[in-house]
Length: 107
Image 1: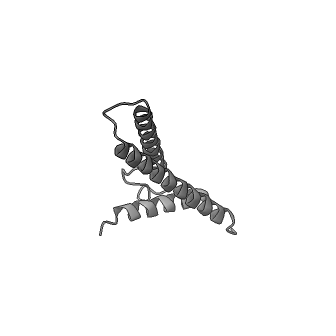
Image 2: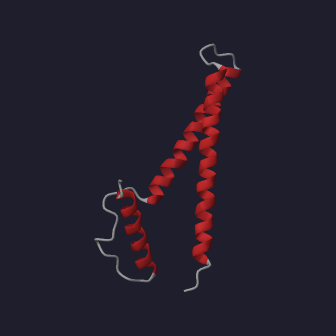
Image 3: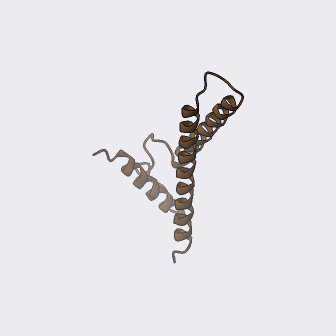
């Protein structure tokens, strides 16, 4: 089982916790050359946006009568874009919920 992602997330959580407590962050606790959470989230948003754009363009091509675009491909791409958007909404909901849980913790 690959635990690099878990180890990286734990080290990021430790460094954030130490920063919140105004303690110096150890170099050993810093993420080791991995992708930051913000970068991963930004990349996911860009992928969702690209999928929606591609599906919209395919639907417009099909509506315009482009003979190289068939209905099955249009519907599949529209469903893929919809699923990726719904997944991103669920991620956002989980992030908001986690933020609210953290804000409600007593210090």
